[in-house]
Image 1 (cartoon, rainbow, N blue to C red):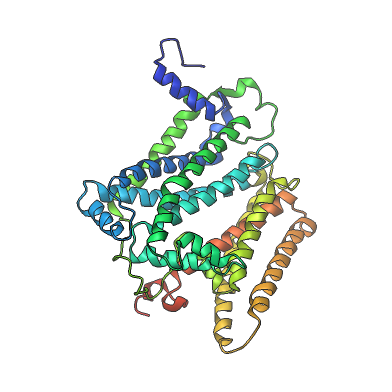
Image 2 (image 1 turned 45 degrees about the vertical axis):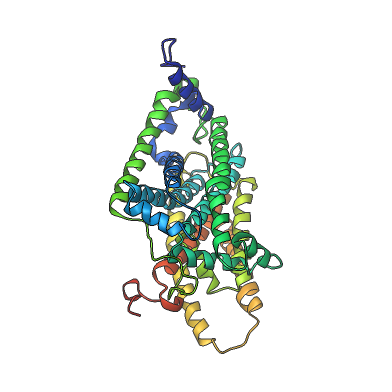
Length: 440
């Protein structure tokens, strides 16, 4: 290995060997450019490292019991040196991790990095997203304040809409009929042991599969595959990854000096906030609950979306040409931009229109399972199929470009629902402007 001699200390050689278990010994020089991946995968790994290190420090003070959890957070933030700062770092790292993983998934789609040879890694990446969501959600309850208590109450209540198993799932996660001390104990074990264990295993597997595939995805060019165009991973790739990671760490640490993690008064099961909401990463699904039958909002639509994402890499020619943004064509870029812009407008109009329709039908009787569940689902499937055939058959886009547009459509629609639910839903979940919510 270049740069390693017999005089190199054993500790340094051991660390280098570990890095080369997760990276190829040499990588194509073309994959070193920052704009290929924006360092999103390495940034996610850096945030996970921050979460683990700060989480261990938080455990030195935190007490996982309903009687002591909130007071231990006060001790941490008010009496422990740097305790507030450590909690802030942990909080913001967890929230940024969700956004970074979502951006990473979009980058993989837009650069065709889920095709042949990388299909399993795409599946593992989706499960890493689920674990990150699970880690955020289970950690959300641990401060045991009003914000956490009622957000978890709302989210676990959604499980009750799952047919046949809803009540069982609720009792399993809550440890009883209501959110209480057993819920806190369950979430604590999941948050500090079960989820991190699976997260680390899948993350290492994820990196190893990238290594086995030869590193980051690159254009299919025999010239680029030549050994003369490959450079040693150490220091070329590792130095770049370290730089991106250090920038992310510095950003989170500085932000955590000025912006504190939220903490309301101690949890009070007898006093519900005027407008309780789910955590921001589940607000999009809470928004769906306002427009769809609960079974479809909580179970059918999320499962359909996840199943489609799982199936994508196994659909022949569904991936764009590898290593080139938007397939390398101006037409592909325009399609992506028009799809994103159109989805923002249409989703907003549908949400506002349906909100007005629901108010006008408040006294009407209807079969909500059919009118608010089955019919919208069939319409949604029909619209997606029609959108695909319009692009592929009429406008002569490739299958990969049509798939790219479909993924953008679904993800942007969910983002718009999240923004509306988080900022534009006031008391009683009515649509309002953010700056007048408190006075509504």
